[in-house]
Length: 239
Image (cartoon, rainbow, N blue to C red):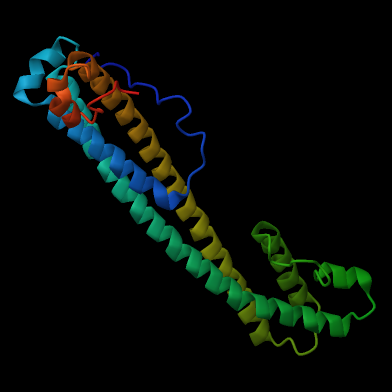
């Protein structure tokens, strides 16, 4: 195996084909990182260094893998932090949405009073639209339109104070929605970085294990203890 100053190994084929829940990714990552660290510890044993060097697994390779593990642990911590931030912004978005919707419905109710029978105007206020607010992208446009029309049409009972409250609630929700999207983008980037780092760690770790599998074959019973330190099955070859 080449030293760690060679190009980064490609992730194992099929590593990302199965969609996983975000909450499980950091746990799986830590498990893989710990396994790599254990393999590095075994590779650093003074009795194992020389045999591994003969298979091009040098101390520099092992040190490089440990460095990757340290960096990956920091990424795993960042994933946890970004998940918490995302959860906070999601709660804020939901609360601001819940505060906005009654005000939007209130404006629609006033529009019904003024424009009863005017299908075109009622449609402009999104009256009769199914699942209003279920699609957040569409709702932003819908709410913008309703607020604008409510400010132009002198709806019955729509005081300046109510218009200000409606516009403020819309802005609060827009800001919260934008913050949620930013947090989600940051979280996704952190998860992608962690997955990439762990895939690279796994590639290097498996190569070290394969070298150990050759040096200490399972067919020799005396090798069982050494094989265990490398995370290898004592009585069968590495899969």
